[in-house]
Length: 505
Image (cartoon, rainbow, N blue to C red):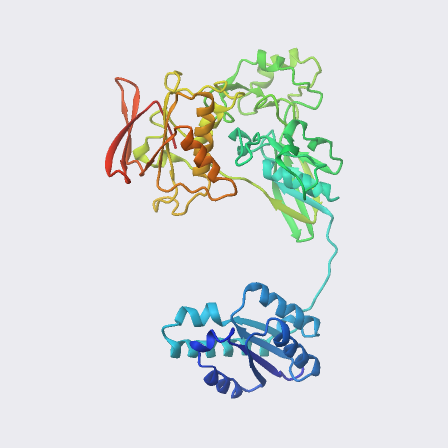
């Protein structure tokens, strides 16, 4: 490989950097480094005349290595690299430094030390391009098939969009039905769409509005010829490399085939009842079940951990289409895909670890997912907001924000969504029960998304009360079966004891 001829290009960002850095000292330092054959200064080098100067030096053969130092945004760094590469210089021989963000501005009160740091940064960049080797480029054909892991709303939308682009798509979901946790949330903000709605596969992605969204069961997702849906399945092995993956999938037995017409006779005669996880265990379901009437696939499934199988077999006897096969076995499927999208969703924080809130001890302290299942007209309470302890209507409801977040004991960051979820749920309850007494205890109300502030304004107009303060404890009065929330109102500087029928974390 030919001897390195390194060009160093110093920009002072319109004089901003020269107020801090000693460019004369830096230039003299650079000219004494072996292999540096060209040192130039200008206001900027990432565009216009400055960039043209670098390209001409490369094309003329004066230099075969380039170091650019200035204060530029990332887009400028990309522009420099692309332009120099198009001039015939391999990108491994190009190094771009941001002297503004990484040197001058952090040390503006120490100009001499900042100048020495700039020299060290430049020396490191020079040695890097001097010792670099050309990057060998290789092009490999990619399999035009995509695996989407996760059959929640995001995974389904990604699968539809990719199929619409012409890719063969495989959508894998570990649960028996599509929808994920988000499908339990009743409504989405800020459009108030039904939570089980997704964009139609025929929608124009550039002009789509929420009016073109449809429920999962009638969205047409099952009719897309180049989209294969695998529920009750999980990945057991992944091999290969980007562009060519070999994925081994285990598809667990459903014990019900596609002859099922969802008549429900099987569930009627099933003698086994277990807690219903989909409805946050607020009710029970049978060993053979569907999450709700409008699901995909619209086929019953048998819970293998609860079913008595051949000891019972009552479901087999009553099925009018002979759709139940109690001898069904697990199936292994091998797929060849070029890309994989991971849309595995989220897991709800377990608030039982916060002992002062007594979740899991007081039945009337619930989470938002549990509340969402109450609000849902298809849910376990038919849309009624009740106290789980005695099934009576909950008229006084307190929401506590930032449970498990903005707390060094658990998660120090803001979840980014809990304020909006509380505002949404509080408003939905108020719409149906205008006399409900609702209070939201918060640290800060953060409505950060587009049109999200509307929810906060709407909640205040509806008479929902807000208390700025994090509750210290939830107490229970057994005489009245009432919850008492201790909280300090930071604005009014007073301690409050909020009585509640239901507390939502």
